[in-house]
Image (cartoon, rainbow, N blue to C red):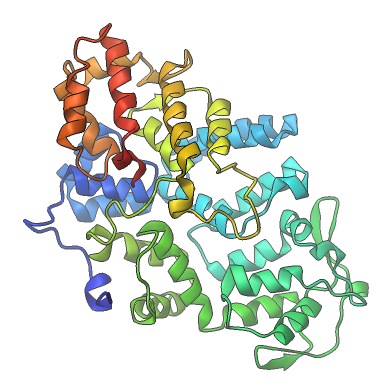
Length: 449
């Protein structure tokens, strides 16, 4: 099945068959962030598609007042020296941030430039990399690639700190071509060896990058058809200048924002790759083109992604104005396979169907139950019962109508609706409503985003 690229990347036009309504708006918020609450959805529907898209793209900048709020929490996490504490702090950031697109894209780059704290073994360096990813998340990919190449955590993780002119280490050179920028088939083993020579002498001193000219191979190298006395900066520039670079990045962005298993051919990628190159490898305009496209609001995209553990837990809480024990949420997310700051390998998380198996399905259900039952959980700073009362939810039928557009990408089945309605008189209102929400969150439909 080939998708017409002209249709795919043309601007979404709401129509009677695909109106701009709560379900469509929720799709945008779900993919460009971590779900919307009912107030945000109502505002988006009232404002229309164009204004809502502008608002989502505006959520790519962290406001100063939020930074002033989050910085002390980050420093407290660093003072503990505990990476799990940093993960809890990141969960809070994802729950509270008004810059949802920025945070979602930072999570994307965390999986792309996967760096594991198990090897780096330094919370400060891991947070420095996290800040770097956030700083460049929607900016210039060329700058991001250069900065991540100098990042101390990455230098440690891929052994660049031991890259000497007498014994070039090829690990980073291989991954920058294979996993970070070009993809297999777009370089040779000789290119890897020559690029590794460019990075010789890149090392760390007092937790900062420095260039050691005594360990740098200053002789001529030939990389991807270009010859010269190249250094590491030249190597990054040559790699990112390849035609394969925007194609590779655009493909990964489509997989992340649109669908896990969309058939992507060269014709579909070409317009966005060309536009990204023409825009100086800027990430933000490419993401905007994706989020505003016909393809994004089509059946090719809606409910075509499996919720990652982060999207499952953070999305659930954000949709219901929830807050809870962030450390426990971070731990629960890790138990489901997405340990923040600990990607499983340099390839990051595979995502998609790999999030789901018999063990994780039970774990996902249990995590939602644990959040609902925790004494630290609040919804809109109140109890669940008071929160639902505030939204006019007094019956199970009303609960389903309230929850469905917030949490579900596809309609709830009549059978599931009947099972929820049967809980109307099961225990106190608060416990019955919690049971009903938990039941809904165990449905196969809830696993889809």
